[in-house]
Length: 229
Length: 229
DNA sequence: AATTGTATGTTGAAATTTCAACAAAAGGTC
DNA sequence: GACCTTTTGTTGAAATTTCAACATACAATT
Image 1 (cartoon, chains in turn green, brown, red, blue):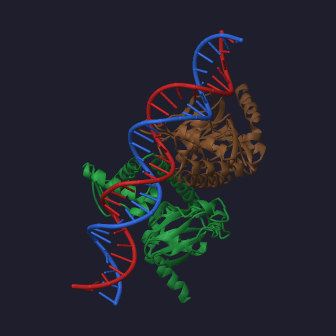
Image 2: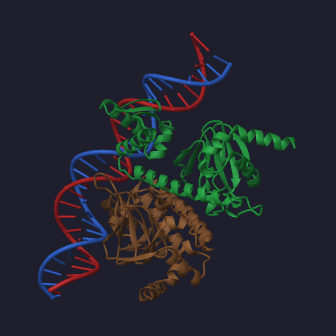
Image 3: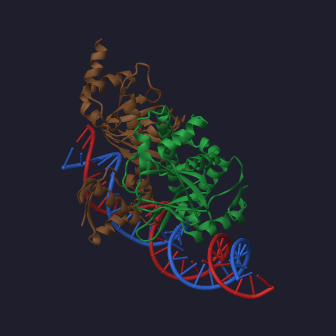
């Protein structure tokens, strides 16, 4: 009993985050908490740099970011890292593999900082439970919307990395960030090496290009803070 | 009345294709035909090279390939074409934009050859009709699965284009094709320029690389037929 | 404050890609 | 078959990226 109480208290700590999660759109507080229990949601904490999901792991679970942030990365057979993206609360990750009922994930997820993550076995979402929670329908609908949105995000990333030069990729990325943040001043979630792995270019060449753009008066930057002029 | 009859006859012409479509998995013949009418499915024919969907068009409809094939492409502000993928029967396209309820599509779709395509207004799928067709649930579920599969496909494409050299991209692509076809001999759905635009490299450099691989005895090829040795 | 480690910037040489221009081969049309 | 168009292959020069190596700045730890 105490255990249940603790669980609820814990979930309530992140209730605001969970309510913002696209997966739970349109579901009230009470129902949400009940539903999470019904779905067998489990929360885990990961230290910085820890592997949340390793390539080849089972792809049964959907991850929901509660705090911190993680990077989704792909590793080449000869060690080249490619960063697919960055996930922050209240976003969801691994949902595509879970929904497609792929056995093993072909990528890995690493915590960028101390992070709390909720996991839900996707089969509990897909195969409506017999308690007949009225919200399963809504949940599936939300999951679908989220998959569609991820799809579009992948298209957007492809648009950036399809550029041929480091400069074009960088500018396409920075313009996208500016647009997203709604300001010409913004921070990016990557350090130089990570940005290079995201844009699929060389770190040194990327640094050189940033310096060049600065000299040309196109942008200002220091560390991960950028301003487009 | 005659019109209705014609429609049914037409649909029956492609019944086999439609039954294979991931969107209609688990739905019987009779139900499928009734459902298509209920969903207001419309079929159009496009000549080779014709634009099926232009960038900026409304993104309300899902396309289902009945015959022929189309290419999904993105155009750069300075005219660089990037090919996202190729769609053949009985696959579906544009579903991500329709499901995410994006207003305008950010890419265009062109017929590679004479093609027949069925369109369904996605809102008819998402917002269950009041006739209460028993299969709406199944349809939504199928759509979700399909979105997840597309997601994974986009990941796979990113894995290919994330390679740094023309040779690596090409080999990654050919290996994927070989795996998909289950044979070391296979045809690709692209001519050289299209393959270059898909892999995001120069056509001339791609041709040169293919010749080189041939000289090195790694593959054989003529036109779009390849054999990995 | 000194030390250590990590992140970023810089540079020049080597490798690769892009670009432009043309040659050769294949396909379609009359 | 002759002609025209499109596709594919080839080539060398210019541009760009990668790579390796080092310099500098910054952060954390003792």
